[in-house]
Image (cartoon, rainbow, N blue to C red; front, top):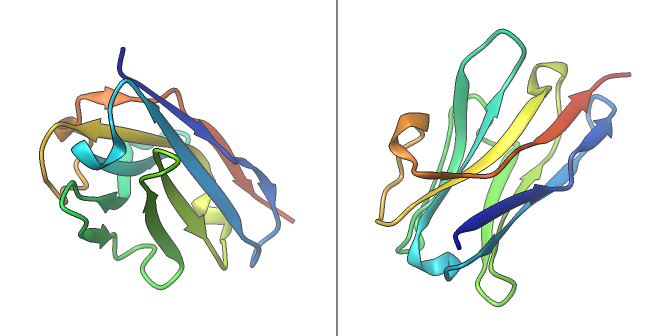
Length: 123
C-alpha cells in the first residue's frame, strides 16, 4: 500500500527554521518523484520543491535561497529544510508522489498524497 506521511510541522518565529520529513511506505523513495506543496488559507496548492526520480531537484522562485529539498534513500524519506521563514510561509504542507521522473510543481500532476502538516510562522 502506497503511503506518504508528513512530519515536522509546528510553530516557528519569523527568521527561524523547520525541517519537514516525508516518510514513504509501499515503495522505494528513489522510484518516484516527490514534491512538497503548501496550501495557505483561502489559496490553492502551491508547489515549493520537487525531488525528481533521477535525483535532480527544483525549487520554486518564491522560496529559492531559503528552502532546500533532499532525499535519504536509506530512511526512505524526502525532506524539506526551511530557513529564514516568513509569515507568508504559513500553510499546510503536503508531500506528493508520482511514478516517473518529473520536476513539475503543479499539484494536479501528482498521484499520491499525504495528509499534510501545519506550519505556522508567527511571533
